[in-house]
Image (cartoon, rainbow, N blue to C red; front, side, top):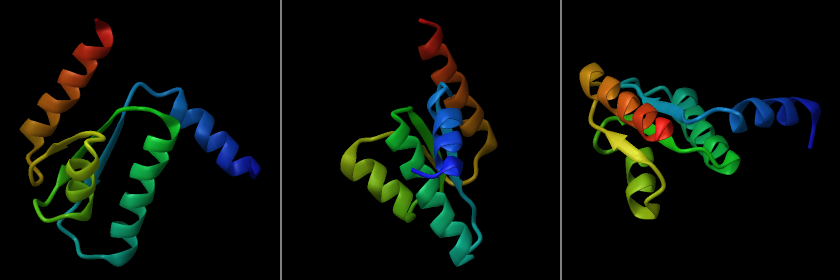
Length: 92
């Protein structure tokens, strides 16, 4: 493991949960980096709250493997509720 990955893993694994979003943009780099971020969070063993378009790969992956929670397309109120719900779970 290189030093950058070790530092990144330490930061991620010390987090309570990760949030990853799939913006409406069809930019290939953004779409690929979102997937890598999701996999980084899962590899670190932290819960993930994801959001974005209903046809995204991230949604399909989460539903297929039941790995995380997924919130509909770019709804800031639903995202806030999801984050709050994860924080509540951590405080119990």
